[in-house]
Image 1: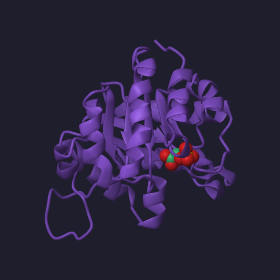
Image 2: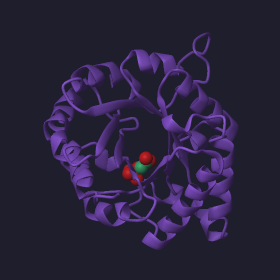
Image 3: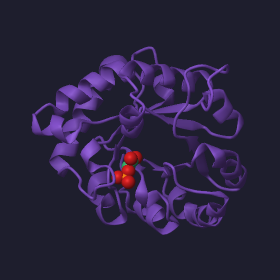
Length: 246
Ligand code: PGA
């Protein structure tokens, strides 16, 4: 089980205090075999990674450029993230797909770049509300998995996060039946192409009060948490709510 926190564009050096509280409480989760990952804004990765060496919290980035280095103003490479202490990076989050026009192909390139740098790539997929209303959830998610997580990736360093766009930051979540159906579809797609099991996270309005129910769903191997990952008590509350799975 992996509980990953996506801090998005939140946090300053003052956030070290809250992160310190997470480190203090982390053993409550890690003692139960739950892996913890925090993805702060890029400017805080080094600081968080230095502090996290005394804990079992892994640190990740929220995006990377496909290239290793060069004339790409404002961009950050996977190699830079790794050198600053990150062990994972989120790619293809729906906010990047929407705000920066990221295509499945670009997301696949970023995932490959992450793995080239030795990072675990967390590839995000998920339908919009209009796509769900049109009955296209399964076809959209299947196409995203096909194109953003190609068989050329290393399954041992791959995580898929299913995040329905309409559930992100809205307080709304799909029913457990809907989560189960989409995760089963993603599992089947991954098993077609990889021999090694790949973790599938659910993301979108996960909080301590709904974590136990969502994390108990078959083929849900953890959560990608936005808003509720900013507070140590909420983040650890989610991790501690995770049921033991085989
Ligand atoms: P949320 O965000 O938990 O605030 O809904 C999840 C995400 O976007 O990763």
